[in-house]
Image (cartoon, rainbow, N blue to C red; front, top):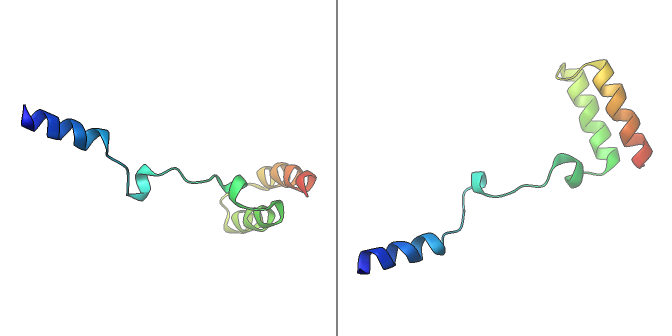
Amino acid sequence: MKIGAEMDGTIRDWKATAEVGQKKPTVAAAKSPGDALLELKKLLDAGAITSAEYEAKKSVLIEEL
């Protein structure tokens, strides 16, 4: 069938073009430890994370410097 063959080709050759379908790097992989520390401080200041969460992650990031 011609219709089936066309559908098979369309599905087989399909590639995601929207942002949702593409894999993005993680925050840790995309930033240096110093940049991550600055971002972490912004999260603390905005109230998005607790001081305990900040201190725990800060310790890990400082070891990476």
